[in-house]
Length: 86
Image (cartoon, rainbow, N blue to C red; front, top):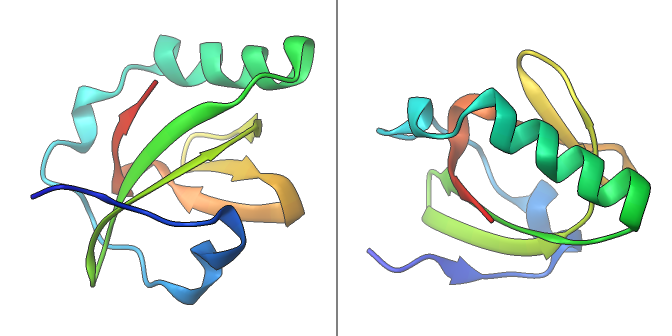
């Protein structure tokens, strides 16, 4: 199923669910996205699973914990919902 591209401001309108392949994204890949955002102000393409299917945004990743990534506006996306990140 193709992920629908949405605006980052719309992320809070969706309910996150666990992605089938959430283990596919390595901790290194997540840390690189944070480094890209903080050191270079670069954006990442983030694909995540919601109860309405996969969604995709292009934004800066500001922080990372064991359970969440945080984007602009203090919006947290569960790591278990992530499908892909580039």
